[in-house]
Length: 332
Image (cartoon, rainbow, N blue to C red; front, side):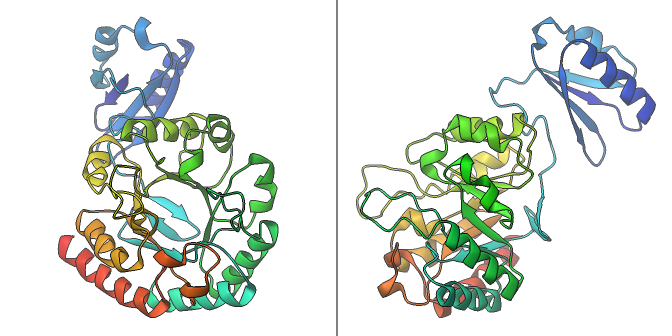
């Protein structure tokens, strides 16, 4: 249930109402918009008399939320969220995230970080812990990879995003600016609940065969714990099509825009699996209104230890970054 207050309500009256609602064993989520304040009521709202609430002098309207997700719903939070990541405002303009699939060496990650920054990237990505389909594939440098990411961050000033697979590793992520939860862990609810208590933004990737509602419910698990800095990421879903690694669902952008206030990032690299398909799909995502694009970039894709086939060379990324900004200007 949401309670929309009238414009100009004083803080004292607002606090009195919130105190009364909490006395009814309800959680209250406060969303301050440009003209209205929206109170999201969390808990058993079946016993709340909506007509009584709506009759109050300071209340403009009361509505019941039909979606199973509450805190990430657009009804709870009418204005689009902007998430600050060490000075980068995700959800405001176009955020460009780039870097190698996996951190391989100090020379590799620092070289790529410098190149992508020069091309206009806002955030550096790189895998330290890598979930792989085969147990025999390279699974990352783990703690050493995180140290190398920190070195690249010091060299360039770029915030870093990398994947967390086990909550027991969280102490190693002190210098990480965004924690990524990969597709395989999208429904690892115990992990998501723990992330609700972490004071860092979370980049949540859609699972290989999950619906949009399931993605939002996973975001809800994190936000219900108190961490509302969640960024959604579409990285392609598993379909019958074999021409691409996965099928990139760009329709998710306008659908999510209607349903949630959370920022939306598109990952065309994992979706297509082919470097030549990444630029057109990245440009299409920008035209469709994405808040950001995450692209894999490697200084030597032919010898990459992980996903070289879908990685752009630095000069290819620089050209793509330039064209994405042109498209963004046109559509905005």
